[in-house]
Length: 242
Image 1: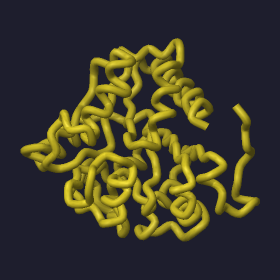
Image 2: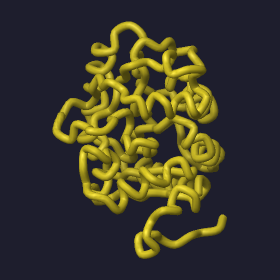
Image 3: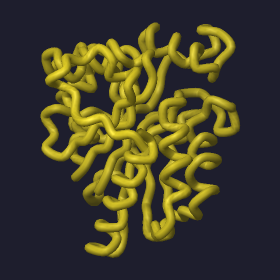
Image 4: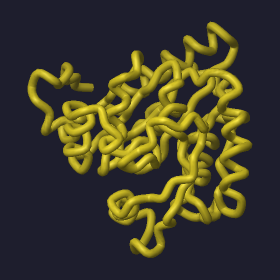
């Protein structure tokens, strides 16, 4: 699944760079993206110096060297492996609102060619937990994380206890994500099966935030057998063995 998604992403990046000399991307983080980023950074032929990167979200009050920091994650798993030189970090440690404003203005200054996203166990998109704000036009917003989201972070090993998980985060807004020309969602693991079913087959609703992806005209969702296990047979796309 991750290799198939990476090949798709590499084609999209190549097409954007060929057409306009650069590609602007949004990079997702979290355990669900490990294999995808490993596969993408190993792809030959991507002109990474022509890529400008933004990220989806970051915790409020967390230092950039903390093991759970998404800035650290992206430095280690994407930037250091590719040589990307143009990137915009959300530094939420001291002045989260200011960081959201500064990076948000840079983000909104030109179209995003492709956004890489995941789906949370509670159906969240970025850190837009249910019920998500589908209306705000702000590029980034300060959100309060719900308990299900915070428990997921503990379950994935980023924090030792719920008390350690920050209560707030900077998150790219739903409307901003939908402004990307293309969206590639990478959602592995049986832990996500219920959220996938609700977002793919249920109503498009703020209570299932990632369901909004169905309103975007150029979104591809990559699932594995486990994350797709609860979908109705007619909903599932072809299964590719790689």
